[in-house]
Amino acid sequence: MMMTGVFNVLNLCFLLFIQFPNSTSNSTSEQQETQKQPSVWPEIWSIIKTRTFLTPMASMTLAWIIMSAPMTLLRVAMHEVGFSDRQSLVGIELHFIGMYAPGFFVGALIQQFGPRCMTASSILLFAAGIATLQTAQGNDESGDMPEAVWFVGMILMGAAWNVGFNGGTVWLTQSYREAPQLKSSIQSANDLHRGLCRQYFLLVPYEAGGSQLQGWQAVHWIALELLGVFVVLLLVDAILVQRQRKVSAVTATNE
Image (cartoon, rainbow, N blue to C red; front, top):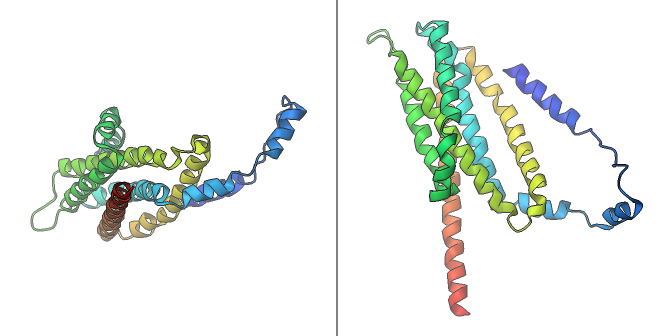
């Protein structure tokens, strides 16, 4: 897992040095017109430093980290409590199903309830998944929990990521609604921000994995703390949105 993060960071660095040649099909007049166009970087920067961009981007990043942390240690933890390799592999497979199966209906829910609401609902799913996985570890007195508890927990974590990621993706489109020509640039900035954060947190489960079940518990405490950050992030955003609406209403009344 650590090597995966290292290779991804190196790959990102190499991609930054790629330069594409100008198309030979462009006429001289078209090239001159392109050169006269002002730089779009100030406009891009003005968007990516706003709450409309940062909040959904951070939401998607947190959703991925909270989901992936227990996933990377699942097979180690299940092996430590006596499950077979096949049982732990089934847990991973069901987790992947939980990650992508909700995509068939999450879009309709986002359209009905809005991206903010659906992103917030992922917190409830994450909380349920973490609570389930915390109880999925047996002890010497009561014995091991049935494998179904592990499977349900991982399915919930996958579904939570799907809801949070898709909600954040739709939410992010609001940041460039008034400048649709910058869509590709804003989405690229979003991918870069999330990618850098994800590579850093890939090291967390790697370090924790060496301590087996203690690492499993540590990763879940980290996920729980990040879930608290997720809650605070969306609460602050909701408060600021309400305050902005009140100011707009007062301004409209005065006019």
